[in-house]
Amino acid sequence: MAEQRHLDAGSSLRAFWLADAVVTFSHDKLGGEWNTARDRFQIQLYAHALGLPRMPFYGIGPNTSRSNLVDYRERYVSNGVNIFIPLKSWLAVGGDVEGLFPNVGGVTDPGVRSITTFFTEATAPGLAHSSNFSHYEFFVDPRYERGRAEFRYHVRYGFYQDHGGGTYSFRRFRIDALNQFFPEGKKRVATTDASGQAVTETRYDSVFYIYGRLTTSNTGANNVVPFYFQETLGGSDIDGLPTLRGFQDYRFRAPNLMLIQLQFERRIKGPIGFMIFYDTGKVANRTGDLSFSDLRHSFGGGLTFWSGAKVVLRAYVGLGSGEGHHTFFGVPNLSGTQTHL
Image (tube, rainbow, N blue to C red; front, side, top):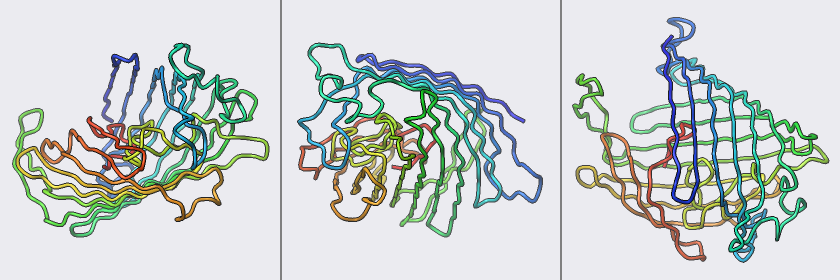
């Protein structure tokens, strides 16, 4: 059983900060030779903390107005254990048990439109008081590779238990589907690893992605999903995953979500490449309102910067929202929850 430890912390000029501590125990195979998985069995113990002094909020639902924009602050702490069990080359299962400790409120800067001035508990559930939660989740990860195509799915079902009275307890189902196609085949490039050993790395010069996400949330008769745990569309979400890239970050928010993204990336020369994309989706207050009508759309393109077989930096502009353009410059999501786009 191998052990790895990871500590990370940082802050921005705007006083946003983060801190992570992760200990990972891993093993080549669980169960012996019958296990054909190529991934390693893992147990992760972790503690995460985020300080978000100014977050945008436009209201809840698919038809919110930009004129409703306000800001709120959030400090978010979580700790728990994650288990990842690869069973076959095409299947893995696992789960999480964690404690969640959000603290949400208004912004005291007099030059800022604070959420507490314009919204109430009725219009922003969870604003009146912050509860502590236990979160239990089970997931299944099927995957399949054939020729120049890869299909990877992450299906999860979880329960958020509110310890502050039970009002905010809810259940959530989510599926992420990532399909990748490599129209120009692949190249094998000789490189060296961190220890200086020669390795062979698979590299693609072009990739076409089709990505989809569906999230549904369910509550008891008198319960609600707190606004800070609801899904968002617009820019990138709280995990750094791209959504509707022509809109501002967190532009739409609701308990339920559907999203479809198409993206093509091409390496031009050396580490430089380009990308084009199209996004469509919607949020909904009720699961039954998720459909292919009244979808929001955005499209755009930009540059990619590669290191070996991986994109390490993206710079793009999103268009088509009818609300101006939205630019992005930064690293792709590195959380491990999903590594697409």
